Length: 72
Length: 264
Image (cartoon, rainbow over all chains, first blue to last red; front, side, top):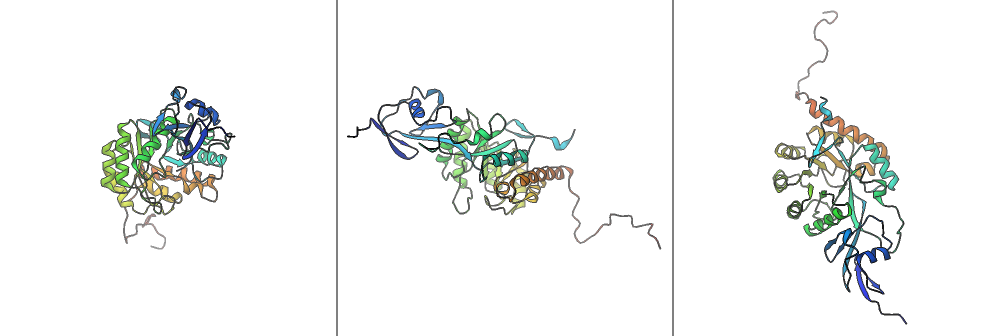
């Protein structure tokens, strides 16, 4: 039997289940982005890198995680 | 003093190169870096996009090849069609680049022409300037709206020479001249350059710089074209400073003496 997830997050437009509560720091770790040059927006507001650890995530939060790519 | 060495000054910072280049459309990051090195560009544009989740976590990053310690990274809002999306994108870019304020704003009007949506561009520029961004702005070659953007506080005005990625060259030099005559901030041609002579023409008109991407990235040999563009921008700048001779229509003027000819 599949346990019901603790929360669903919408990351870059896609809904993903997570089994336990997370902060932004925990999410960045879970996704393998520690040490990568990324930026995070939560529900339309920037989450500064210095506040990842103290920013909790809740059911339905919408996150954008971006990187720099080639462009003109 | 060598006048050609006069630096390009944007938002109080000096740059030796007047060629700005994009980083899109290259085969790989190694080619991107090689072309940028050949171009001599100090300011390079990047786009901001969603990262892949759950795959390719170890894949190389563009900024590993273009370290912000060596280049001025100019994040752009390419692909944004509203002021809100452009502002959000640049807030993310500022966070991504550790508080870096110099940005390129472009708000597009439609996917066919990629012409700027000027009402949205003006709206975004106002918000960004208020939030402390230093805004270099892609705009229509309209002297009135270019002046409006300058009045809002944009640090550089960047009218298109022709459509983005078209390689059509400088289609309306007279509008560019009108913008140049009125502007007190640097004016850079952004978009439309196809080959080296186009870049030289932009600089001969008096533009302070040229921003290009496709003309280099889609040349048969991007690294060689990057080198050609570097020389074209420098040659055009020197020709502008030197001041060209007056055009004499329908009237030749021999370069050799008209006296002392044998048999006279």
